[in-house]
Image 1 (cartoon, one colour):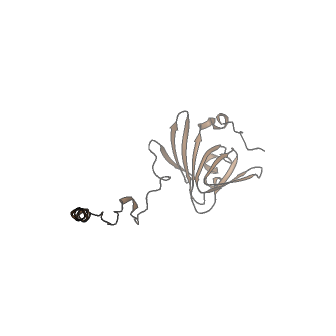
Image 2: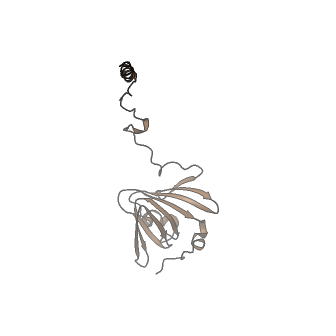
Image 3: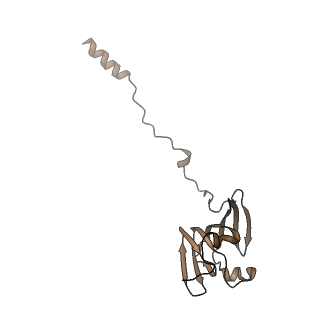
Length: 160
């Protein structure tokens, strides 16, 4: 009998783990503050400017450039840029990633292409384009300044 008593005493002496609620980490707490939008944040090492209402951030990457272009809602190339550039249509090729928004592209021959984020874009020279809807368009673009068309094997003007 003495052995049974010792065992029962031993069981009583063992502490059971407490069942306190787990602490919440700081990351789980919700806040009324919005976190900054990384797609709109400053880009370290990039030069920034605005042209025709478009915010343009440019940085070198090897022989190429990486550009973030932010087109505001209501932007239309022929209304905002035609008088600045002096051509009827945008004669730049655009190759990159549409990270946000929707754009409508129209070529002189009437061909229409629409892009909606997230999507890869390849836009030939000779287009008009505009933002669709109320959301700004954010395009991450890669180019070789005046050599983009030849270095990427694109046509010099849209054709079928």
